Length: 363
Ligand code: NAD
Ligand code: IPM
Ligand code: MN
View 1 (cartoon, helix red, strand yellow):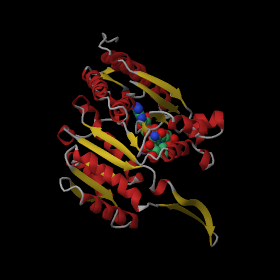
View 2: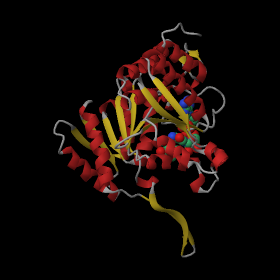
View 3: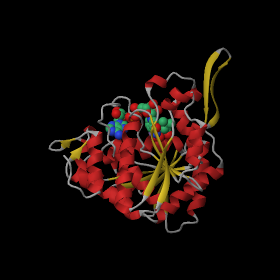
View 4: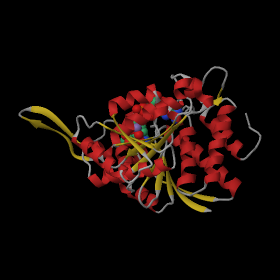
């Protein structure tokens, strides 16, 4: 199989983990006889530095011409004072909008080998298998106006939570479709006791649910959902929610697995190309130290192989290799616990790669 992949490393540890992901794709290509062609594009703060914009037109074109997009992360304190349209995060929001990536799938799984890395007890997290489906191109992130002004001599500010009903419908529908192939339960998370947008969301969830008699629907208020996710995460199968709630709940969910550095994601549109990225950010606090956990990014590669290319065996080869390496005790610092072996980002990648290629491990 031949595939063109747009690679957007971005900033901070985004660059470090993206190198690793490309290595893993090359290993998969070598073992299974595929050709992956990589074209690199700029995004975020590093694009601003060289091109004066966080998302150059060439990057958008490159993504649209590719079969899939792999993205590291964007952002960093050095760009926090830029005018809003030049901030690295705007590059990320714009590429999501340009590619119409309305549904962001963020799976959280239990890894027995990582049980010591989670602050939660084994009985609570054992067997967790939850998928957050986050709406990605609407809500507070994109609503206008979003600005400051003066009213009666006072400083005021507004952000707008705007959705079209159809935008709610398509992402909720996708969540039900995915739930059909899982445990057939959808938890729709909202704040319908306060927000009008959430009351419409609930209505749409009911409307979609009527088409799926075999899938159970429950509604849950977001504050309760945040609590239940820690107290009894096993009760969840597919969670569908609007953009900002999904952002917050998915970082919370990563604690069930053991680290933010473990959670991959896939962002889907109607016609592709899809985009794959870890859910974490550029982690300026550990940038340049070769200690970031590359597994969220590597697991995003597995999602790409399965979802964009239909390469199930290859996706499993990546996931199995990650499992094996964890079972063998290799750990980056974020998941390190007593009795394990501390490795760098590059060493972790090398271990996963060697496992895929069935070579002797090198450490
Ligand atoms: P972050 O996700 O970058 O980091 C949060 C914490 O988790 C940090 O302590 C970090 O060291 C740790 N961490 C994150 N990924 C890790 C990994 N792979 N391995 C080990 N530890 C990891 O969030 P933040 O610090 O709030 O934000 C930093 C910058 O990243 C901001 O500019 C923000 O806008 C941006 N950001 C970008 C994305 C993205 O590109 N998708 C996502 C989130 C945040
Ligand atoms: C994420 C990030 C982004 C988001 C930011 C950097 C715009 O937190 O991908 O989860 O909020 O979507
Ligand atoms: Mn986030």
